[in-house]
Amino acid sequence: MQTKTDSQFEHAMKACEEVFVKKMSDYGTAWRIMRPTSVTDQIMIKAKRIRSLEQKHVSKVGEGIRPEFIGIVNYAAMALIQLEKGFADTPEMNHDEALALYRAKISAAKSLMDNKNHDYDEAWRSMRISSLTDLILMKIHRTKEIEDHDGETLVSEGVDANYMDMINYSLFAIIKLDFPE
Image (cartoon, rainbow, N blue to C red; front, side, top):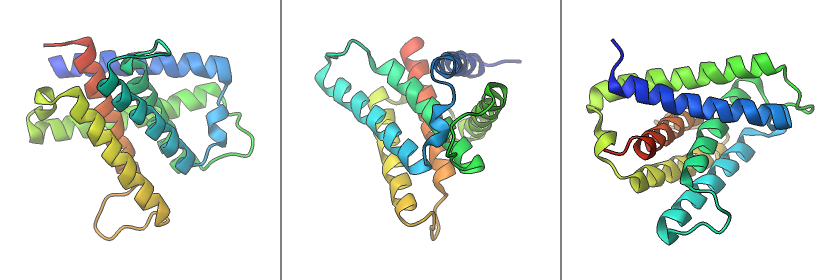
């Protein structure tokens, strides 16, 4: 039986995948040339823009925060792919392969969310979107620290776990935007 959270997550994941596919149609897989550290910086730009819009309540370029959360989901999935495959000197990747890898990363994030949601009793539903933004920014800073230490940690999870959390926090935000309670 599909729960409300499952159906809302699938709605949000589908919205992100649609953008991923359309951008791949427009740009190909140009993102394959980016090193994971550069992808982290792209995610940081998106998260900082969300925070700026949350504080200013005005967008001068006409796009709201929802597209930025979608961008974080998609860039974090790209970063996970880059960690697995390595960056490329030539950006072209077969689009079917790219989409299959994207879906695998999003599916893994969903599995992680299912496990955490069980343990935390959907605590995210009581959170403000701005708190999710702050958590994403914190995860970005953690990721940058780990990257600056060549991926070495003493007791912490690696960058991949931080990217997975960024995906899930962004999906939570999209759900909260699309299904206000």
